[in-house]
Image (tube, rainbow, N blue to C red):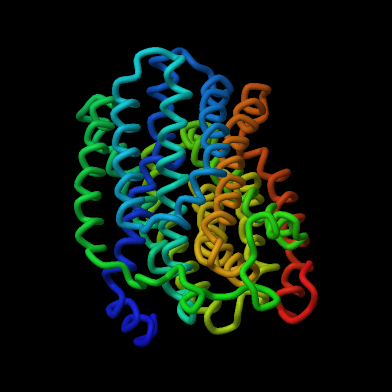
Length: 409
């Protein structure tokens, strides 16, 4: 990491730290965390892979629908207030998971976890970075997104270990306590926000054609829908991988804890890719990176399907991590370049809803196929084809970004 990047991080540590804290706390509502309890939930509630996947998908789909409205709140409220409300809402959701005693409660609990965790906590963190920073937007998003990586690396392995000494329900109360503490820290970090006039014209970055696009205009453009598959596919299939991690370990003949022990490898590579992408966005722009960043994901699912044992899982996770890391700074920067930052919260709310939708489809689709006899690793061949198609769809959008004075798509 260059001295200039470290200097930038030090100078803006308070605000970047707030974004990273929100990103980290989103982990309690992310699939990679919820799924470590999948075996306990299925056993206690008598659910099959497909049954749990269906319940999970229903709650996640509902959260995607609400995100279309809730995401726009990031354009109206500052991170200190909105972020605090989101973290406290996520704490309530964790308590609800700990207290759930009937199957019918699970979709409502999942809805709350996904809305406040994967949805709003992630959303407001990235919107704040994209709005607060212009020339160093890629670096700011990458540093804040480091919180996602810390969560991926630490939360699963810590809580899998804790499951050996405590009931799984009690661990959700621990999560709630940690979120309350995080709320106090967030409010301390944001005693003052970086740009008090960040919503003014002079402090906003314009999009294509030198203007700020409304959500309606963005959704009517071809550019947004060319980007949409790149938002949907990683969320769908990476979520499916983490959601089915217990099954993947069984299918590959390895212990679940051995698979979870690979998470730091996944995180380390995703962090490296994230910072490299953030630097490259600021240095080269988004257009040069866009058509290629999803290809490692295709190779990763080929490795999952084609190689056996822990080696195959490690290779798959390593390749998947390259796209996951790039996926943190790149789409947010692309949307700011395309549509400007004044209405970015409302526009990115749709993007977040698409990602949440993908995270709903992945578990139920993979669960149904597993119940039908097709193990998740074998599904990797078809998933790889999807990512190749997604990469091809990004080519015309990259061309458009190279010619910003042309008529918008």
